Length: 338
Image 1: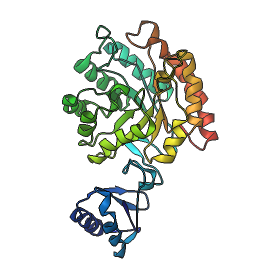
Image 2: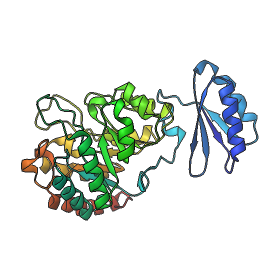
Image 3: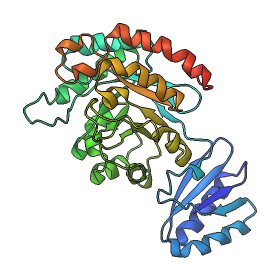
Image 4: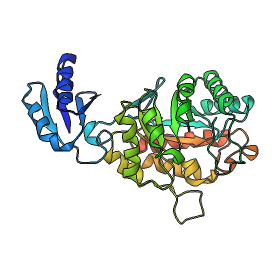
């Protein structure tokens, strides 16, 4: 259930609703929108009729059920959509947000060159993997702690907040100290221990869809983070595993408009992992924005031919710059901007 408050409620009135909700053995999540404040009530649905009594309060507009299993992620909770702030960069709203950088941090020179290049090309955030989950235990696993610090330094040099993947809940304090946004990769999309821990911090989380995760399961994964108190979640469609082998994954662009209908959380697309082929990244990036995505996650490497991971899907800097130029008219056509 959600309790929709009338415009211009006071903090005291919000606190009154929260207290009454908690007295009914529900957990109360206060969600502040542009015009309205909503209190989402999570608990045993058998007592929902008791929450209906809150409509008698003068400052409560209505109490309404959320019929979907993902209570806090549901669009009804914030119909205007959420906007997530990543150290001054907003994801959601009218502007398309572009996150770009190498698959993995390989050296100081490599990550700095990538950071400068994507900044010049128009990116808003810098991505890079310091801890790399790989299918083979013998493949490059990333530079780990050192790589995280190199990524942070490169971001500072270029003037870009950084996004990087976390795999182990025990590393959260390290990531909170050095990263602006923490990414949950496809392999950890249903690592509920990690998701719960990320819900207890306030850093923004970029949650990727699992390789075989249905959309409802994807949103329930987001619900784990939201239910622990962290509202700063961005969803990422990165392709799913199907019978098709011509591309690395099958980029499910159906998911973008459907997720936009179902949830208030921002939705971005990763066409690099979604295709695994650099020549397909630009057309699928353009299609993603046309489908309604709030942003893109693009892999860019100064020299993909020598990349230590995922070289075939990474763009050269000049190709990234060209992609950004092509994005502008598509964004404008769907009422967005870069």
